[in-house]
Image (cartoon, rainbow, N blue to C red; front, side):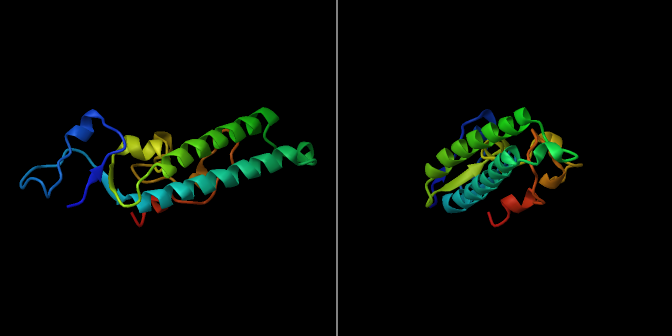
Length: 154
């Protein structure tokens, strides 16, 4: 029997019933189930993405030709993006380091957003996962990475 660990306890988490526990019960809501090892891998991917963004923003901030370019983000925007990225790295590292690799986690929407595994709601396009390449947020460069790719293999 697998042990199921839930990252957060919310009202809708209490309504989820495992199919193996009770026959004929309708599951309320959509939850993704993944092993701790897969979740750690997904978190590491997001940490590395944020690290790349922080480095790019820092390089842009330090670029001596920045003011000569046709378009350059203002210093304050780049500094804000760097601070936001560094904070996100800290949070995701804390979560990753406290996930038990051998456990199974059932994740709801709140958990997936908190772990940076879902796009913000404004990034959804007609119910489909939006690509981060179209997202401009606080001056951060965006990779051409589908959010769906962050959840595959899980």
